[in-house]
Image (cartoon, rainbow, N blue to C red; front, side):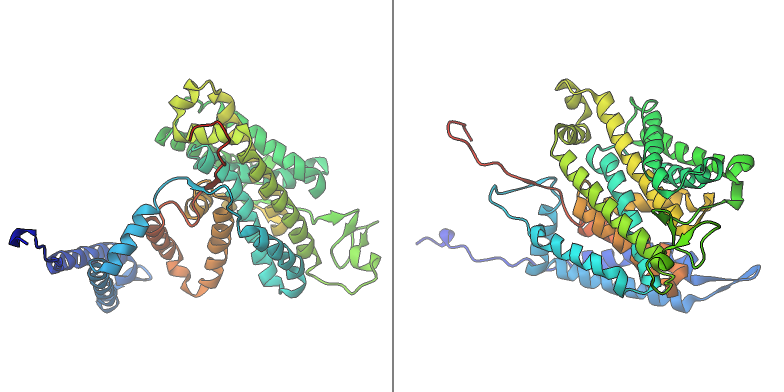
Length: 432
């Protein structure tokens, strides 16, 4: 055997210089990000500079980045990086005989959800209600952004329309919760259709700017139309009723409290248990409708529009109707969420419908996975419960939220759960 045919394995040496450069670069970014927040502490009209905390954070970031760079150059680190790179693909097609584990998990979750309100405290129950409201908002925006690929930064406007629809509908027309639940969805859907017409030829950044302006227009109208909306003072919202029975300790004149009708002791949680129950049923209905729509021609048309609008139009699809249907259905879901939010709060004002809410809902869609229903549900609860758990870090909650977004974009760029499609078995006589 010739000497040239013998190949000895060559072990790659670690690039220590590159690791040090990565650590220094990470330290500079930490200085820029954390310097104005952690290093400078406001004290009235002056400020105090605290370098010790800032240096400690920068050193921790640099050490962490150095260790991460060294690890990524090992065999295990390279395998992990390869897994991340392969996970950035789009739709994942499963085998035709694949059985989802959700068929066992979903019934268990439903059973737990039925008994949850009777075991939870009032605080935990209100957090769960807020989480379910954001689930509705995430599912609606997931149709517009995740499935149709239309970047909507003014989605909170439809949320506000549903909430103010209940408040103003009761004040001027005497309409209650049950009447405004479908009407709020219809009003928001109409607003979505009206927004859809001017933006039919727009996409990308231009669409985002127009929808952002629409959201601000609605907020300014609510804030400045004092005679109709109450302006910054807001509007009170009536408590919900069930077959005319009220949930308060004492009913209005001519009314009957539900605890007296059922001959049970008064429980202040009854109102929230009722909202939670109806909200669970509406969320399940929306999940079912969305699940069916994604498998119908309209759902495939949304995805075709998201992937390539020119190819979508070349295939003969009416892009006008596709865009309008996405805006309308997504807005109607936000209208439902707005009605529940107004009922839950008992009061609405424009400060609840700022751009930050639109950004939070968009973050739910992005973190959960564009187009992924399960991912959006998980992300909605994570981003709703996390601020409650981090109340002791109230000053840094937005900063932690931004760090979470950056980490997710690096770790799971397609979101927590990627879109998956079931494959179809080949039929006889059909070429693979």
